[in-house]
Image (tube, rainbow, N blue to C red; front, side, top):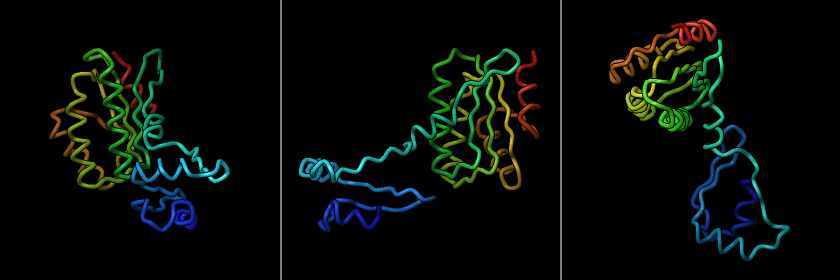
Length: 177
């Protein structure tokens, strides 16, 4: 794909940058250059990428599950990089904000997630903003340096989010009355 970019869009600099990450190619374009080029392309030259977008990947990581007859919002940060962590946190807040205050049970899985300073700051603000909607929240998957981030997020948000060793244990705690 990278080798095709100059061929498809010319060497005139119509694309701003491109890079690869985990086998995927990402390209940023000038909007007007793309519209002009697509209008001039033959149908056989068009390239359509059917891979999921970052937004849809974040959407799939935030979903309601049912445990013991109760709904739990499962926010899956497992193995996220810092950029995806922010996308998932934003999607989590969007889903929570659609629910009545003090009504949502949340389970957050941070197994193998990586953070940077910006992601930690964003996560702190999201945890604080989510507080009015969360009845009870739990975290699983914390290890190593994640413990320091966990403590910082709790201190900043003034919320207690207990951590558990496994999903079943956390879910059982969440649904108990």
